[in-house]
Each structure stands twice: as C-alpha cells, then as structure tokens.
Length: 174
Ligand SMILES: [Zn+2]
Image (cartoon, rainbow, N blue to C red; front, side):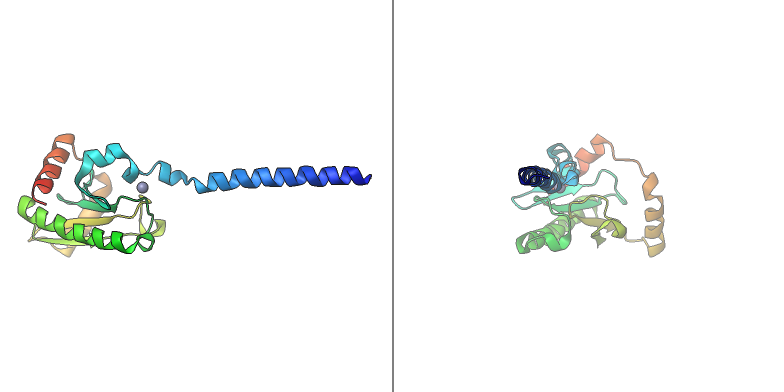
C-alpha cells in the first residue's frame, strides 16, 4: 500500500473518531430525564405550588398519600440530596418547617413524617431531589400508615378544585 493511501486512511479515521466523540458528548450531556422532569415544568409548578422563592418551591402533590402531603424541591434541577449546595439544603429544611406550621394552622395537622429517596432502588421516581412532607392524624398508627402505602398505587389524583383549595390554604398561612 502506498504511503499516501495509509495517511489518507489514518486522516479519515481520525475525522470519524472526532465527529463521533463530539456527537456522543453532546448527547450524553443533555440528560433526557432533565428535559422531561415534571419538577422543571413551569405548568406543573404553577398548578401545584403553594410557595416559591429564589431557591426552593413547595408543591402540593397531585396524588397524596394522606391529605396535606407536600413536596419540597430545589428550583435547580438536582437529582440527589448530596448534589444540593449548602444553601439549598438549608432552604429546603426551612421550607419543611414553614410547610408544617402552615398545614398545622390551615389543615389542623399535628404530627408528620418526612421521606426523602435517592436512586431508583430506593424508590425515587422523579429524578429531581424532593422531600415528602406527610401529615399523620392524631389517632393514626404504624399499621394505618402501612395500609396507606399499600393502597397508594390505586389512589386517584386530586381534582383541580381540591388542588386549588389546598394550595391556597397553605399559601395563605405560610
Ligand atoms: Zn427537574
């Protein structure tokens, strides 16, 4: 084989390598989960939010485990708790407290628990970090809560009037 032919083959291979690497890096940097993230969708946020400031948002979930079930999220698309910066971590926990005090006033909530999942095997369904704030009735029990989790997949989504009512109630008392 002529030397010039070898150079041409090496040159073409190099071009193909560079083009394919550029395409791969461009695609892999655009996470498809980010594009379809419901917590980055302005329509979802505007419909479900009861609180928003520069770093965090409080949402009423559209499928509550128990009435008053809220979600506290950072505004920035961050997948896991350890990816949050210090300010976002603090702001999220401050909003948990505000949410509870508002729910206590407006929904007569006394007790609650928090749930925060990281990773698919931990049960994280939306890849945008969120803290579940879940109120518990005074007369509830571990068995009753377990039952709520068991029937949760069959729960219906809240209708728009219920969504508007609860987000307004919490928002007015926050
Ligand atoms: Zn997101």
